Image (cartoon, rainbow, N blue to C red):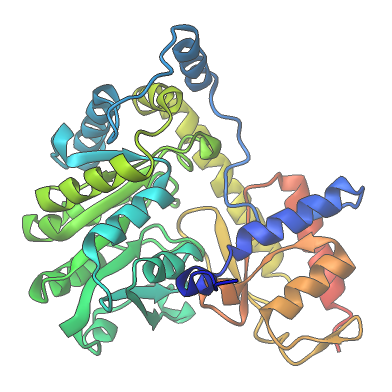
Length: 399
């Protein structure tokens, strides 16, 4: 039998989804597992959004729409970008896709040729390097440091040979670190990209989840030259707790990029779910109260988790400014023994936590950050308290 695709075989499955599935399986078998692996809000989709989806079904609005998204949703996105981000786009510069992950693939496919380089600061979301490889490009990893808030610096970029670099991915706020870039930091990165004619893929899916009074700044909002090279990725999943509805979108004033993506999507998937699109219009137009409530809850949970984690002497965590994750520094655990098992890396630590304490976390190696694990605080305060207690109790047995 002939072999299957080498490229396909090179793609690694999502570590976060795999661990979430394992924890769910253990729970279904009756085990008391506390999972810190979730990459989605634990809030129900707001009732008004759900009702809009139901209304679309009842009205028979279940047919094909324009492949790049229906006009009503594009108009709502244009209005959102204008009123919330001070960014002016037209409907023709918006493409609605089947989730932000789909949007990211479309953008990388449109931009990259075989052998192009794409700069990717680490820690990074596990899907980025796999999508880059899927389009035949090379992920160029820049390791950021915990001491610098896990943010790439202009000094690091100046050490990169820009000759083959087609794009850089900036995830702001960041998954998994919760890092939020300031306007000055974005300006430095953006101007470097302008100087070297490099596209900026600005994944802003967590834009509403920033804390401590920090104001989110969109990369495209710095100046016109940076905007011309910036392709915004956003979606409904995190802000509106609509992970299962699968609606993401792209905004770019580069007509060539939009044209390629529109053509690609028309052949690969056609339009996103019509029902989800109608619901998304309502989400964008009438969700301020829900967003504020969710943000307030997440900030409270973050503060609780930080206080509990930093009371454990064997581990530590810097304060994240956005998203709903912390990166737990476990470097003092590496090389030690827990429950008779030597902890050689973050996978070993995650395994022993799940087996011995019934606590599920995501190993940092999947994010390009060995020596760390990611914990989501998208769970109840009760579970946060119990889960961190279990981690503390287990680490007290470390030798």
